[in-house]
Length: 419
Image (spheres, helix red, strand yellow):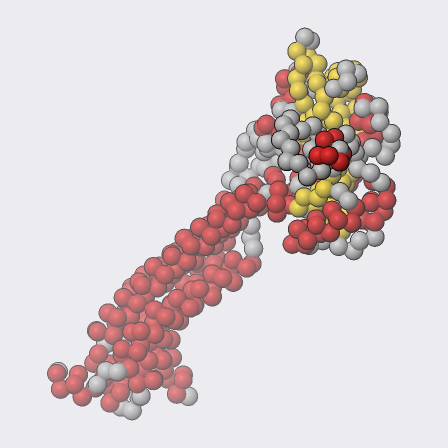
């Protein structure tokens, strides 16, 4: 019963100064709306940028790196065993880049519960012949099904179908920039020359566009058996195994484990993209900082309004305390006022933030480098709305607590005597 009376008094004080109350609520609503909109947009943008790199990057890459030969001929001579040798222009070892026992490694990966999947790959440097001009590029031999399932390859194919690499023999999918240089389109023939001087005719069955211009100007894709044929290599010839994990956080540890277990070089995604991840973290941090700053500013507005309300309602506070209401009761009245402003303003802010985010999500965003993106990226994550309403309540509670504490200490005798 007493709580209901306190709520009724708080309601009466709220509506007695409804203009100031509305301004405070609008301040909270604006802050929450901007917080939701900013985080939704920045998170969507981060997801878009991450997708350009991380969706195309394996969590763990297994390969054989080119290393200098550590066992130089001079070290084989016993008389020079304890000598200090100054050797320049050390040549790389003669070991090949192909992965040894690739079949056994793939069978082992299939049985590993930590592995979501893997995609074999074969990279071959080639020259694309354009009359008398040779354009340097690379052919990536892939399994189109695994590449599409794990790395969204089909999403970047803007013309043609990635599965035609398997259906059409001696076929190729070319980067948009490379295809424009060669003036080729679907069903045209291109000629490639290997580093050994062998020439092959390949049929263009698709055009892809990754969003990275330098990448699209040099890269092309073909089925693994096509690239093996171009390089005159056997069916087990692979230069990379791209591994996707169920938990990306395990990548650094598993890279070390695989390197030791398979006697192969391994690189994890965190190492390969450390700078890119740092940029995403900084953008997210800035978004949260700006949003929280808006909420704090709104809290100061509520604090000032409640302070003014206490100053103007000292007579009412004195009467309440003189009629038996305790300092705690008065304190609760003003906290109820602050929380009412926070709840109403917060809910309205969530709704406005969702509407603004939805409007941005429908705004056309057309760019030649990202053909698959048609509107501005927005991430409608419920977590943002939860953070928004919690900060709204915490900020308004703290903004109301200090004035409420001040009101609870007012001596009614001094106020009444002064009147």
